[in-house]
Length: 272
Image (cartoon, rainbow, N blue to C red; front, side, top):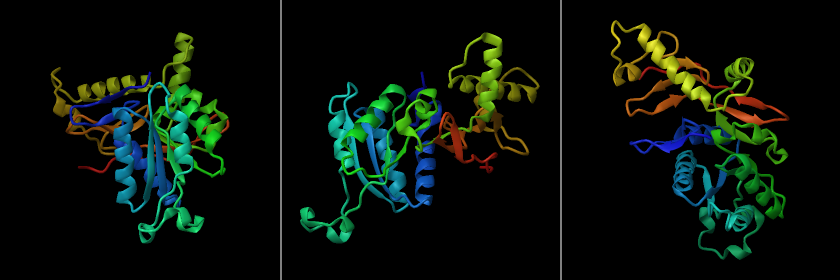
């Protein structure tokens, strides 16, 4: 099961990766490709509300248009209502704010181009199926997600072909996965890379210690000449002073039987 939690500083982690950095990455990538209008369908809980605020923050900071947010209960009550409202939603340009919107032409309306669905597994498929059912105008939405999508269940859903999500590049994990299978006869959960990278960080710090006492500052002050961080299974990462883990993420696309890298992660960090 994916690691989803909040640290003491309010940082939210999904799949062990800071959620704020995930939304920042995927919004930036989408807008660089001319997609400026965003909407979200999210569960009606703390996680859904936090990710909605992140989406609003990054879209508006880049002068994009946040069209709407719709929430549904975790028991899927009101899911169809939420997807129907998003599929038919539109924004109104500033110049039209005081006009009767019922008389606005399609030219005057701003429709969502990108819809964020922050779910994974079977629940993700339920949301997408519902959205397709109520997309009566057959609008061409670009679906985006979070690192929760980094799962075989995503590849098994034909409705997600062509969708985008932020995650670590998976070339090193696939090697780890094969070695794990050869040794233990089963595939490791995707989140196992976090435990592996944590042990890696400890070993790297211990190599440079003259005693066995490791403190928190050893993690945050760690640097090397090439990376300015640790180079793990999920790429380069480092610990921030607030205890959060920073990773350089890629943007992956759901392809036919595999995830395709659309935008590679950066292999190093700038120094503080």
